[in-house]
Amino acid sequence: MTPHTTLAYVFWHQPRPDVGTEEYESALREFHARLADADVPGFIDSWSVRASTVPWLGGGAGYEDRYLVGDFTALGALNVAAVAGPQQAIHDAAAASALDGIAGLYRLVAGDIQRQATSASWFGKPPEVAYPDFLADLDIGGSALWQRQMTLGPTPEFQATGLAPLPFAEYEIELAAL
Image (tube, rainbow, N blue to C red):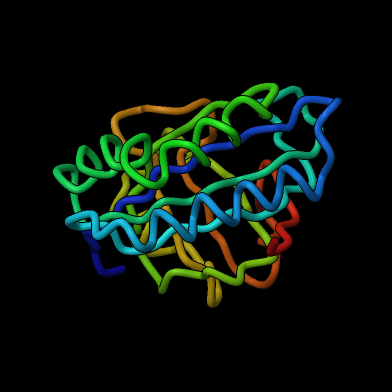
C-alpha cells in the first residue's frame, strides 16, 4: 500500500435536542461552503455526513465532519481560519447548536478519498502482527484506508470509508451525504 500525505481532521458531533435537523444541517453546509471560499493554504476539501451511530458519543446517531489538509502546517492554518473571517459567525452558530463532539486526526494510507462513501468500517491491528504485514494482507476493496495519528481520538486505529462495509470491522457506521 502506498503512503499518502493527506491528513483528515474528523469531528463527530450531535445536535442539541431543541435544534431542528434542517437548521443544523443547513448550518453545516453553509460552514463548509464558506470554508471552501476561505483560501486556506494546504486546505483540500471538507464536508459533513450523517452517521447512523457514533459509538464514541454514546452510540446515538450523529454527524461526521471531515476536513482534508496536505500536512500538519495546513492543519494549523485551518484551525485558525475555521473561526475567523466570514466563516466565524456560521461556525459559532453551528457550534452553539451542537450538544456534544469529539475529534481525531487521520492519515490516508491507501486508496482514494471517498467523498461519497456510504460506509465507515472501523478496526484495529492485531497486536501480534507487524504493520507492514498487516497492511500488505489487508483487503479494503475500493475503500480509502485512514490511520489514526499520534493516538488522538477515541476510535479504533483504522477506518476504511467506501461504498460497502468490511466484514471484519469492529464498528460499522452507515454514512449519508447532507
